[in-house]
Image 1 (cartoon, rainbow, N blue to C red):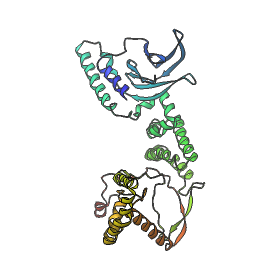
Image 2: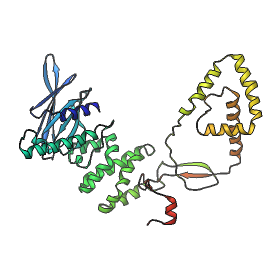
Image 3: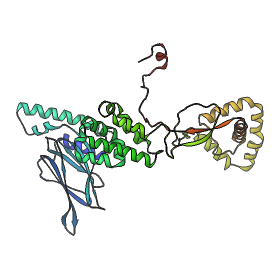
Image 4: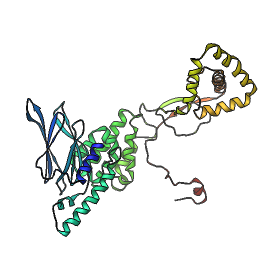
Amino acid sequence: MNTVSALFEKATKNVDDSNKEPTEVTGNSIKWDIYVYCGGIKLEVFKKINTEWESVKTKTEKHPYNDHSLIASLLFSNDDIVILTTFGILIYTFSEDNKSIFLTYFYFMKLENYIFKNDNTKHGIKKYEEYMKILQHYKRIFSKSTLPSPNYYSFRLDGWVSVAKNNKSSFLKSGVELLTFAIKEHKLELINDIYKNCMTYFKEDPMNNRSFLSIITSAMPLLDKYYPEYILKYSSETNMIIDSSFYSIKQQNKNLHLYSFFQSPQIANLSKSLLWIKYQGKLYHGHKVLLFLITRVIQPLIILLTLPLYFVTFYFLSKYNFINNIFTTDAFSRVYFHTELKIFKIFKKNITTTPTVTFMIPYINFVNYSKDYNWFIELIRPQP
């Protein structure tokens, strides 16, 4: 992102590439030639062979935008190039393996007033000032640590649609916006391709790829308005109890009820117990006589004298991760965690279990309560 920030800094200081045709940008191992013209961008990559630069690949990217001026360009440390034009910012990569140039990012911008840069008339100066204000606005957007998601008009560029649709990570990140664009623009083939991609990725790995279903469910209001047949199709392909290997039968307690859960691994934050771990470590590596005295004499006496309070205190310390059972060097931890395990085993024997089926509801992120939802107000004055 430092390179992108430097690109905007270059543009705001009027150190641009607009008067160079084509623009040359030299990196560590390759050189880029860039030429922006009406209807397209031409990119050419050169490699130095002996002492001469020789062309290894040329790519022409068609674009539908009327404004077509190059403002500035810079290289990343890996020789990827970022280009700022009057219709947006583009990032291209050159692959050494298959000698190809491909687009990896595009964000549409409306910077057509850049053409008034050298216009000294009153009207021209005003228009160029407007351009600089808009450029500062985009500079703030791109000042964050990650690139912003492409906006609606970015998908008018066919090259970017191809990347967003066919690259798995880009598809997951931009899929909702891409499907929204396809529906509003009535691009039937693109809608069908997006739908097929979502279902294909999901069926490959239902557990880890269920997020792809949210691309479809997030756009359901629009699908219902324009293409309701896709909702019927989706419902038939993803029944609530999926007729495939994606279900499990396990023993549950007799208090049967529908409940939601999250099956991905849960990460416990053990940072609160760092002092506890250090204490256990020092105790373990400490003097053997002192260790024996503390763990076999002093701590058992404290436990006996504070028995009810001891268990309550350690229960809450364990619940909120201030202590853990990674190391149980002393009597405090050994007695508490051993007792906890015994109690759990006793209660587990008395629980009546019955086979239950675990299934998945395929409407990911379809219905969510708003952050302003108040259940108490809902009881008094229910909303329709």
